[in-house]
Image 1 (tube, rainbow, N blue to C red):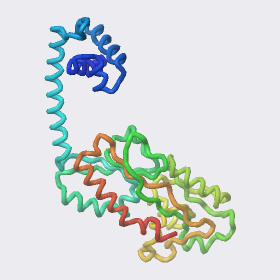
Image 2 (spheres, rainbow, N blue to C red):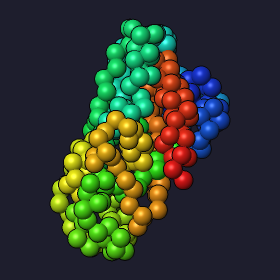
Image 3 (cartoon, rainbow, N blue to C red):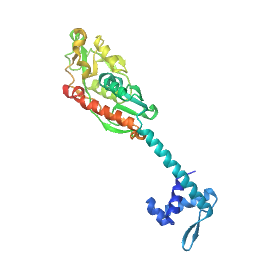
Image 4 (tube, helix red, strand yellow):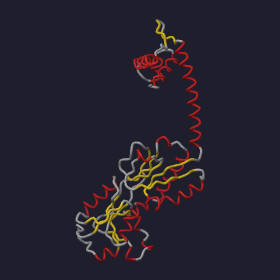
Length: 303
């Protein structure tokens, strides 16, 4: 049953005419007539008498109108209940975020968020490569993409500076001066999606003669492979910053063949049906502030 036909019927009942209903619904009168006749045909009853002076509602039509009024009131009450629930600072939020961003930038601030709003439960879903939003059942997501999914709403944040790094020991033991990087082992990105294509284009342009030795779908695993001298690869520049924490051979050094590049844009996205929920609004506001204060560490320091 097409429930929308009842909306057309209710408009005619309120206005007392097809033309009045058409004006209320902002459609052509012929559309109202067609939908009304379709409803009468499906129900097997006449809802209005057509007279020389206009439409006259029948007893059956008046009964349908009363039922619609009752249903409308119930729906309004349900809407008010749900709106009130949306404003309560409780319930679950499923947040999808690349694990490297979560660990490096987000978790410390989320700890304060959880302490302040202890009735909100956060479920953090690590993202490797692209996230299948349609099947992921997430409420808020941070994704690196130039084509955000149309199933979510949001805004761009920032890009991330990336470069090719090797450990100091690996660079000292290999000829990294050749333009085509022949003979270098490449630590590749294995996760499917837009980031994989971006990394592949960088290798093709600047390190075409390197040989793929390891493929990883986690940035921290890539970083570790590079630190233990297995090869070179693309990393976010901020992962090279804490040099003092590592023994000198494992410290990272940028290779000169490729200038610092900008990654696909980070987007902060929300499920459209939850964007007015107060708990989601608070989390989104926090994440915007987190990345606004980290722009220099993500990008500006390395350009």
